[in-house]
Image 1 (tube, rainbow, N blue to C red):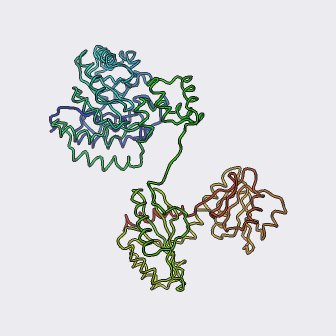
Image 2 (tube, rainbow, N blue to C red):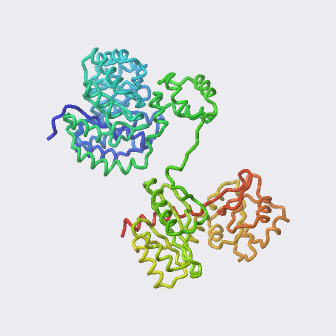
Image 3 (cartoon, rainbow, N blue to C red):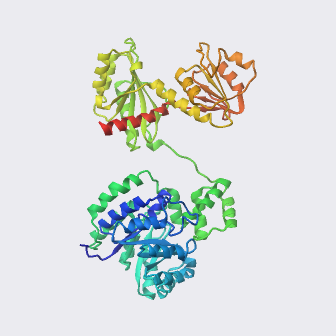
Length: 605
């Protein structure tokens, strides 16, 4: 039995939310979410392409299933009213009629407020098909409140059941919402609706104001998923309305479970909010203009945000190419590409820093530094590789931070004295770190190795073959580079057996040379004992990989044999070359793959 309601939340997750995933909701997605959403108490559900019926056919973004397949999937899943968006300038009456024949219950006709009167005949047509018809005045802010009132009156005179105020770029404030809706109220008697975006984080507040001003239909999406900065979040809106004593008829607990179970796994990897979205909200510049904005920004090195705000204030609906050119020239060379990592790092804990010797105080600081860095990168896992050198005369502990990303903060701990290592391990008991050990690098018998693993914690210690891990990373990268037509020849300096064997088996290089004085010949490669033998031939190569670290004199010789477009790829950091001939490669990036091993083991066992 449905609950009584004071308001209708028109749930747009499957329509506006499709923008966020490039219009890729499938028919099974539609069936699943429609069923769940209607169970929670939503009676009006909008589905389909973000730009409406026929948009995919008009080249506005491909969908995995067409409009009618999505519509049929929705209708088979619920008794709730199912609607779709319809923009006459990119669709057709035939498209709309087909949708009605397949069970469409309501339609919202979209047109820019400045041209909306041209779409009024489509309201009459929709009504003739038996549809509940709403008129959505896109970019409503592009006309005055009084003009909006007149447009609303015109829509009602042509048969509209509801008139929608649409804040297409999330740039309106509650006072504007009130003035626009009051203007319609004064000129006609109809159901009002509000559709807001969240560029300035006002979507929910503006929607509440719309209800206060008499709007009966309020648009929202689960967790705010939608175009640009997203929409009013259904769960937040429902909670606030209920808290105000407004009956929504929505089961809040079930809605929150739907959000956690289905939408959060989808949305957690989406980035819907950044400063460009704020600029679009403030400038009232629609995201459809961004391709032109980006092109002008790149041409004149203009700060995109400044250009967005300036152009939006000139005309929020259209972009005049000459005006864009003039404004871009005026803002030339204002681009800001700076990105500081200071707030997501810890002072003194830098990637690739020299190894630091750890006193008790330094060790505490090291642990604190890794913990702080991980906390600031909420999805990152702290991983430390333990290396025991086996030289008991070396009474030291040292550490270095080698690689950090959004997924891993990777460090390495060195110990010469086993007793000191065990004392150090005690310090890690109360921190949630993961540990890696390479048995080949540890000079320990089996019993002592197990003792170390137990001390670290068997449930958080993982064994690896670090040499093979890095060799696979480098060889896969080189094999990929060999696909490009400009990379016909490869010279490997130093015979890394595992790397060279992989390259010889899987790469597309026409010629592979290996320079090493202690070479072991392998089929498919030309071996050279001394780089001087090569330089006398005066032959150029397209790519050089430094498996071993050459001295300065040898490095100078290697630079002379690189082709004009070629480069040297090095995992060693002690070299510097002018221009772009030297490309650094941090092999510690290979440890990113260890995260999958850790996550698999933790989720499986």
